[in-house]
Structure formats: structure tokens, C-alpha cells
Length: 359
Image (cartoon, rainbow, N blue to C red; front, side, top):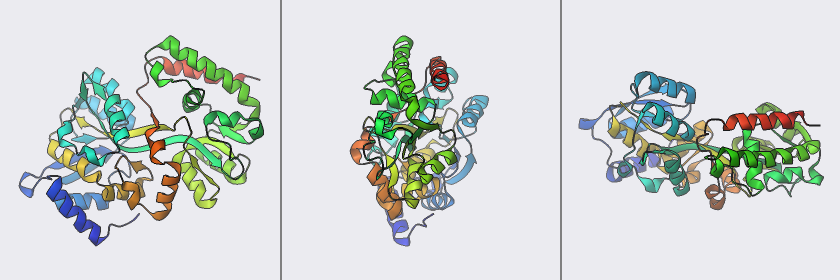
């Protein structure tokens, strides 16, 4: 983890107070933050408390626990929470556990525009926005570029010259990724079960056709990393941080954003319905989205944030890997997971079972 330099601290202090309108000591609040491990590092909290006068109380959690805690209290007990974007619209419509985001209090210029717009769209309920993006990651391709230079999209894993040297999981990201690479749009069909089934049927047929060329269907992260390190697999579907971890050992192996788009998840900021410290919550959002601060979070969490320009402040090695995998056009082409309508996962599971059983 990088420590923040004195010059950066002074810069942040001046910029924060002058331009972001953070609270003074007289209006300081206690921010009760419900978040993931690594998203609120101690050095970031200390700097925030010093500059704003707010205090921060952190409770670590995950998606299932966050929703359960907020459901149990009707949206009480916390002032800011960080569920994934696909865990907002459904719970809000059913349980009313969040309050709308006042977008006038968010410094939108600090966000990567395409991520902010995608998250706003995926968290809108009743015409109101309930979430803005924070930490994100993707799955796509991990490729030994020296041995598999032709692998640019998911369906390239089926090319004849790749037979016996590729790996992917029999999970829903494989169905979604292959669909996009085949020119289909599965997320657009989420509202029409018959149309979605027609897409999944086509992808299922493609995966059965490709099955003889698959080295193995990996099921765990360590298994995938070992397959790539050993050379048993030279191309695979996997996540970005896994590709960058391999790149640290072998510069030929890296994460490649597929031509049809990497598949992305975003953990958000939401305001619980009964939160009592909204100003502190908005101050925290605006503070951690500053590029220098966002880079501090990336160094701890391992994933990048939706802060525009934050990649310029991470370690030189991570910056180089990120920028090689994600030029701006690749970021704008990410396919962000929307909430999954009821019943679709059953269709997906049945298709994957048939692929697994096929000869």
C-alpha cells in the first residue's frame, strides 16, 4: 500500500475544502459506513476526518449481509452503504431500504462518465436514482499474447488453432460473454424471457460445438492461475486482476478486454433510507472520488474505482497494466451487469448443465 505524500496531502486539503464544500467542524457528523474490505483504508479515513471534522465508523460486509441488515431495520443503522449495482433496484422496489441520491451534491466531474451513466440507469426506480459507482472490476480474457495472439474476443477461444489450450468456467459470465461476441445482446433481452431463451439456446449450441477444444472448465481461481502459469492453457476467460497478477510473473500474459466488451460489476454508493448523516455521506463520496485518494483505495482493494484519472496515481506497474488492458474505448465498451430478472438464472443453469453433459 502506498502512503500519501505530504505534498499530496496538502494538495488534497486545499482542493477539498476550497472546491468540494466539505463540512466544517461545527457541522461535523459521524458517518456510519457499511462497506467491503479495502474500500475504506485507515489512511484515507484519517485524512478525511482531519479535513472535514467528520468521524467514520466502518462495518465490513458483503452484498447478502448488507441487504439483510438494511431490510431488518427498514434502512436504518447506517448512513452510507456499498452494495453492487445489481442489488439496488430490486430491493428498493420491494423493501424501500434506500433514499434517492441528490445528484446536485455529487461532483459528477470526478467520475468516469460512462460508468456514472450506466450506474444511474441501472439503479433508477420510479424515476429517481439510488446509486452512483465506486469500485469496479471485469471479466474478459486472460491471454498469453506470445502463444495466442489471435485471441481478441470470447469466441476466438473456439478457433481451431486453440484446440486443447483454452479454459473457461461453466458459469453465467461465459454465456453472457459468448452471446455478445456472437453479435447478440443478452442484457437488452432481460425483459423478455422468450427472447432471452432464444439467445441462450444459440450460445448453448456454440459452447457444445466448442467443447472438444476446451482443455478444462476451471472452477477456482488458483486452478486458472496454475493452468496459465504452466502453459497448459494459453487463453482463458477470467477476471482482470487475475490477468494482472499473472502479468507480474510473465509479461506475455495479461488481461485483454474483449472486442465485444468486458463484463463489468460495480460496487456503488447508496444512502440507506433512515440514514442520519447525509452531509457526511456526500462529503465521503466526493472525497474518495478525488483521483489521488481513489488511487490509495485501489492500492489496498486491488480494483480500480470510477474516479476519472485515478490510474495516473497508482504504482507504475499497476498503471501500465491497467492502461494496456483498458484504453478509454475499452472502458466505455464494458457491459455492466444489470439486475437479473426472476427466472433467467434457471434458464442459464439448465443450459450450462446441458453443455456439461454433452459428448
